[in-house]
Length: 187
Image (cartoon, rainbow, N blue to C red; front, side, top):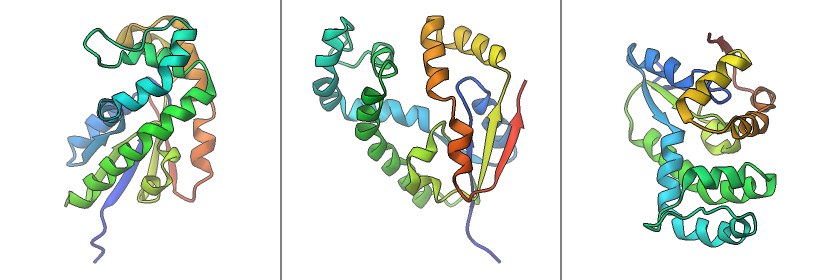
């Protein structure tokens, strides 16, 4: 009898329905951890480093990434980092080690045999991805995703398209692994 848990990466582009798929799996006894939530925690833990790294770039672009209470304005930070691959990479270098430690701790402390990691770009954290036994790649039609993102996130269409563009090769990145991939077409 194998005591190892089944760990599934539920991934896919923005607004494809990953959270919906995870919620349905949770009804069948799966336990999930959401990397989007962990990103927010990682940003809170590294506020000073993020501000010192990005404020000079933001000031040049006249983007205010700091709220009046000293916290990070995540929407404006996103506007900045998704405008330049270099900025995105700098941000990832700050937050991904923190996210990796959160997920590894969750996996170590969780006794469930059915675990979901809900993450769009888990391939960028190979240490975590290597723990997965399967990948569910959730996809949906472009315009469906666009409408969902617009309604849910209240973002300017140009910013949504910017993020969509940043995720355009997502499936091909997961195909580089040896982990079995199942495509889930969400409407």
